[in-house]
Image (cartoon, rainbow, N blue to C red; front, top):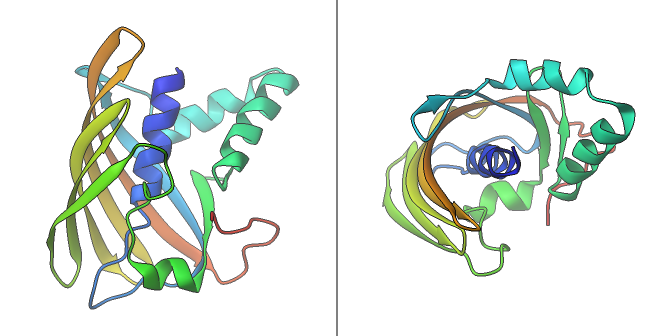
Length: 174
């Protein structure tokens, strides 16, 4: 389950890539992934994962929430939420810049589409993020991963929607 959580987090974070002509609005965003495939097997979507979280013992649920919080995200009603600052939106940086050993490359950029590749110690792949409007993004990521001696591939589609300017207690990821 741990590799899937990391892949979900990566996909959701990649959903935060802004495009050139349009810009995402800063503030609270909710990202969901309903088309997740790992090693050719369809995985539960975000709604199913959120429902499973409700059934976890309190200590396990807290552990999962703490792990997400450490990545700057929290559980929402339809996915995971993150706060994007104005500086993050304007920076147009790929989200792996602060992950040790990770590198990224922008392959192609148009007014509303970014195509990119990335390589980290335990995963490499490519994807694209399309800015539908300043309030909606759609991302697709394909990757090959390695966890210990286990290797595999994944494909994930995610969607992000802007909820508003107020992030509440959630702080932008630094």
